Image (cartoon, rainbow, N blue to C red; front, side):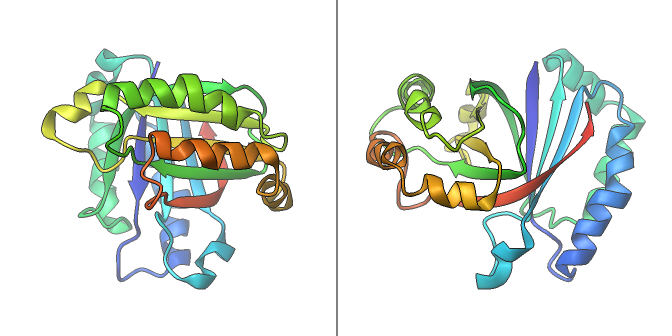
Length: 220
């Protein structure tokens, strides 16, 4: 199974509430009608995150399909065309980023109440292929050891995305916590300190955009 992730920014002339309402109430049933979708999730950043200004993204849409053939078939349907036609009604389509990724569940567990999404950008220490392996095999177990993390998933950009040059991001790191307080508690742990110490081995530590979000499971 493969996953498509869309990084969303709202249309500049829309208020945040209008963007979120359209995405949740209008766009959701359009996307849910697309044949071949096994799972569809919207992640809406917590409103409190906007107190200091714009966030890294205004939303993350995740869609799971069986394989590349299913993805191609889905893209040829009128339901898919309807979903694309609706995007300009609420999304800044000039900034829309679509990623086809392989999902790695590093720490199994429940999708708890608070979801952290980090946009992972590799540095130049390792090549892309080696950085993906390092992220999964070395860094993953270090991050999974944080006690407050209930679930941890890495979404790795597929190799074909690198044919056109350096991508916008190399992947997404998603972690779930029971609460924002638990996430804050994690920041004080020795395990988190080890995560931070390891990041320069493969991540651009000067540029680690992240959001806290509420996850809405709409299909699957």
